[in-house]
Image 1 (cartoon, rainbow, N blue to C red):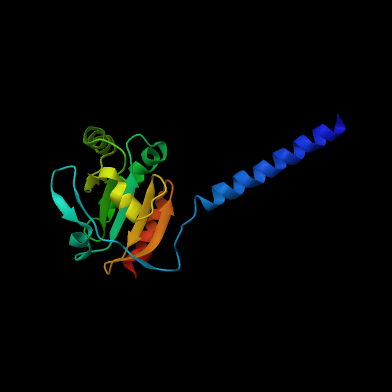
Image 2 (image 1 turned 90 degrees about the horizontal axis):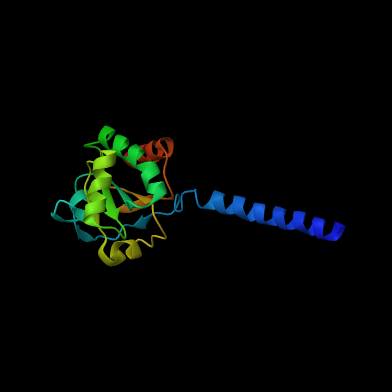
Length: 171
């Protein structure tokens, strides 16, 4: 009996460590030192307008956020993205890429959270595959020169978002 109890505690400890390490690594920036060129793409916004990433990069840096209306972490970060996008309007361009969703649900999501920056569907996950997105939400911070200087996996909080935004603006 004592052996199985000791074994149970060891297993619990082992899995606890694995969970903690996983949580730590999945809530950290993925690329904060090495910059990578952001792949250009074109897509149709929910408004029906066809655009390219490079259209926006000619004017200002871009925050590229991959999201879905059915995603709980996306719903958690949406008010932050909406608020900060309005505060930084004219300095940074926020763009949304809607993953595995419908236009109807995406528009409802935008209305619910007051999102005013452009978003469009990633039909067939082509854009997500190009950016090697592993899930939603994911956020990329792209300089005016088209370099990805930060990549955040998971819901982003306001402090982290503004810290990376300021770094992006000072780049």
